[in-house]
Length: 340
Image 1 (cartoon, rainbow, N blue to C red):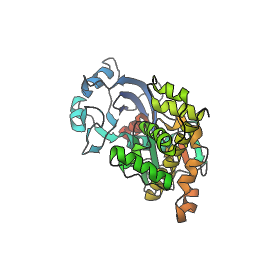
Image 2 (spheres, rainbow, N blue to C red):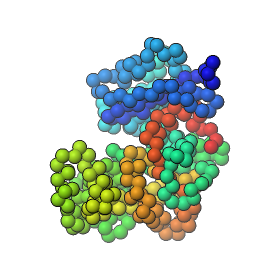
Image 3 (tube, helix red, strand yellow):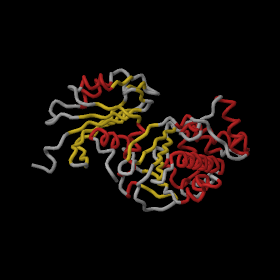
Image 4 (cartoon, one colour):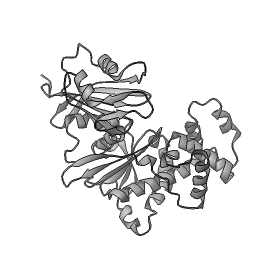
């Protein structure tokens, strides 16, 4: 018999507007062994129960004993209406469809936060502060991607507990004349200016447009041509900036890093994140050189009398794309609150 053969099987999912990742894990004394992981389209023509039914093969020798779903949307009373998808998920209804097993629904960034303290060093890149730390104390997580996710881990002296947030939709706070001009630029187009308007894929494109139209840097003809055919305009800006081929793209990405550092510093102060700050999400690994050049760190530290406190906080970028799934698996097993 293999190690942990008698351990419970748990079901985890990362449910997004475009795709859903599902996994079965064997939970053995605090460790999680992946048994099967699949990624499928979040097909609105199907119900989520149908998606689960297709994943849980009749040939599986063991059925899950518990489940946790990390979902892109605000979770209230174990029910969530997804932000960018028609699915409405309810924990009690899903439990009934899964033979009565316990089902927990959390925000995807809440699950991402749970995974952060358990990531190996190979999946983390130090950006600022101490590179080695015990990870005890509150932890802040900021994750720019399609939108901007925020979450935290509260440290009770022994264990971490996840705390969800919709802080990406809070008011953007400009710090200098250029950022004040950026606020006016976005306010004219959207009304309310949230952090997400800047710290996201669409935000990178907005920054490029701002630097071109307001700051006045000239647009490169090759970059302009790429926009016509590129499926992801933010990637065009990022690649041109990182390849040092376009000053306009470089200035836009540098401004992105500065605003990200300011937001991360605000969250670190708000929750006293002495356990560290993690930058997760899909964008950070792709623009990593821009986040390590100093602009992010300087904006993070630029908090007046609390600069000395922030200098002691480690900042890491997560390279783990499966963090929401791994965090959901820990929550399903009840291991997310274990000491680290």
